[in-house]
Image 1 (spheres, rainbow, N blue to C red):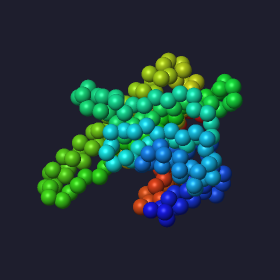
Image 2: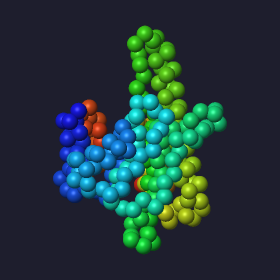
Image 3: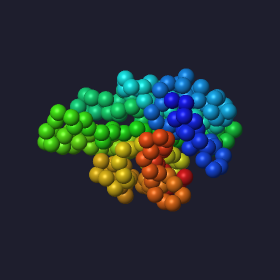
Image 4: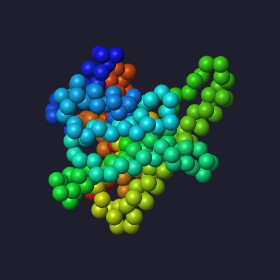
Length: 219
């Protein structure tokens, strides 16, 4: 709806200038993303990125960038040991140039992990608990997969020297077991709050927000 779109744009602009890199969740299509950029952000971003996932609802992760996108890697087709696709939407991986010569780069992994929502109508409490546990387990596998992707992308000493961020909607607080391994002591990732108060931005039914992000110590 137009009023929701306007509220989204207002939330993105905030009190200051728009960021160089805007990572989004639940975007319908690349065309919708480009139209939104032109109509609501005055074409602020020359680069737009979205890769369709297998989610029939068309609620994919996406990126708008002021910085040149140098490379893109999708993980929509990644499968786990059970033969099932790992990510509900994608773990969209991109590298952007921080300088014109691309001598300095920044890698971002945009995620939207498994939701906590479970349909309760017509189900017993035991069935609801079983589905909640299954959702949490899938979120845990997704979080571990993100960590594995980072370790493969930046092996050895490169992990400590590289500049990267893991951002998005993780559908879990930092201390929850389903995502705890992604920020365990041996992963070297640290939680960065989404608001100036030091707390995650609150859920909103009117304006979706990026609530939390994990950034490597080198950034």
